[in-house]
Length: 189
Image 1 (cartoon, rainbow, N blue to C red):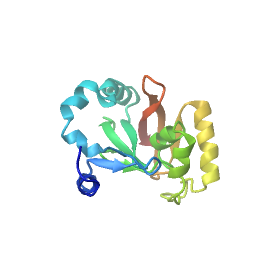
Image 2 (cartoon, rainbow, N blue to C red; image 1 turned 90 degrees about the horizontal axis):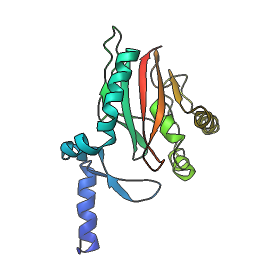
Image 3 (tube, rainbow, N blue to C red; image 1 turned 90 degrees about the vertical axis):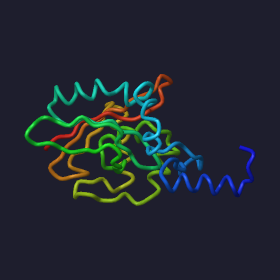
């Protein structure tokens, strides 16, 4: 951009504080943040993982009669980027833009299991927060769980994020075979 490094840093710091970019803890590089979607909704509709996944989310929600959601990895957290709510009596509510912990959610574990080991290790370097008595808080136990997920191709959240709620999710890969996110369903246990 041909600006002084201090000026560039101040500009990037400002847009980071507003949520338009985030710094990846593992690579120390900046990436476009979820809030940028507010400015690029037309592009989301035409070209994104979100638009491609929408019919599948709708089908999952209808067939399973449970809430279906699409999530991506962003700044050491999992961001819900699309939701189709259940039409059943008991609805597990997810919201677009909601952040969930990668080690306790099915979508998070599905993504974690497919990320390069150095990124997974970086995420797991922090303490694993206990949300319920069933949340995995041992890094060794989580690594065993991720190995199982890679073998099975799907992840479970057995009341690890919220009591009385279970989720199942599968990773979604881009055309190059790199994990792009996860798609999952949540319902009452």
